[in-house]
Image (cartoon, rainbow, N blue to C red; front, side):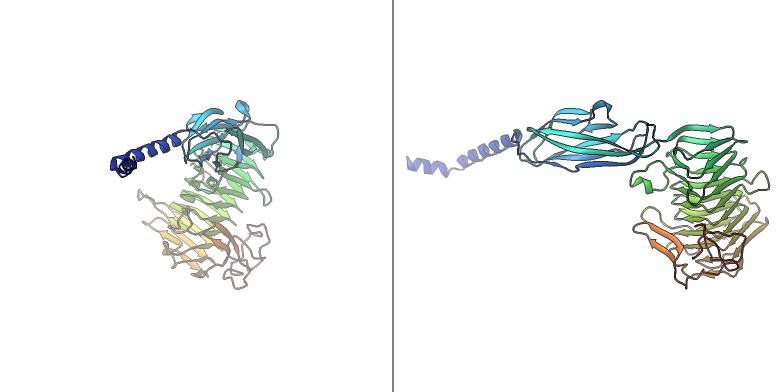
Length: 471
């Protein structure tokens, strides 16, 4: 008998049988469900937070994962949104859209996704409020929770808006523009200090009449995209921008910030009257994907303005009349926009080779950016014999003297010593450093401007170059 067992134990066929049986037992174990209350369950997040969400407008979808960290299948008896169908939140569990999903199987050492969206209903208050809920995950007699938290904000919603008569926007609530807003010829839209305008990705502001933005230093007017959740709240091209067409006139912006546009400001055609088509006073244009200012045979006066980190900060084509005084125009490459074009380009022509008169004065301005792609921060182009005049007066810029321009007492190729430039974190402070050796300090020429972009007093007689006066 012992000899027979010995013979069987050394047989290859016997070992194959043993291996198959063992594999079958292990496979069956993996296919069976673990029912122990001590089963291991992992959840990638214990709290999901949504940044400010406008009431009646859904936010970006967020998600989390549920992990089965066991060598057997795990059955979740339910995943339940505790607020039910009346909740501001909605769930999608592994492709099933429902606020309560039962009997969800998770394979051994596998995971599933849970997606969460939020849509907040209006309330009478005009301040941000917190909308909370939770998701319960039930398994093997256990209950785990994921907390949900969103900050909601009421707003005035305008969809495909048309303004035919004089209208005023107040700062009681922000405005959310969906589909676009058009100001018709003969109508004026006046926007009061502190008003915030959030535009959707398909929502340009088209001005055939007049747009007046009356901000102040403590309560600027803000235009930006309507995605307030990170990282989208820092991306350029979040909305189309503001377009001033040929019939538009007498537009004035004071302490107005325009952020995240595709083309922040576009002016088309000369002004119908003797006033500039657009006057910018103490304004900031930042992070526009294509252009901060793109003007075609038009007229702009800009004083104490910052135009920063745009694809093309200022692009002037087909001539026109322009005065930029005490402006800082600066661009640095970062992880969303590369500085590949001059900070200002001035031409009396366009791609169709049309030409018009060009008259531009740049006075007490900084035109600067990091080296690498751009050699000259001021680039000019003259085609044909149309009247053409560019004056660069007491400016600081990187590059060679532009052709076809008159240069008066300007500074070339010296770092203006901005306060803070951090391309990695995209933090920029274009005030001039306190260093007494900063090249633009007391190097400007006297103008009628008594304040700077910070609404601080300018030095009389010898102001600083740029939008900011060192205090």
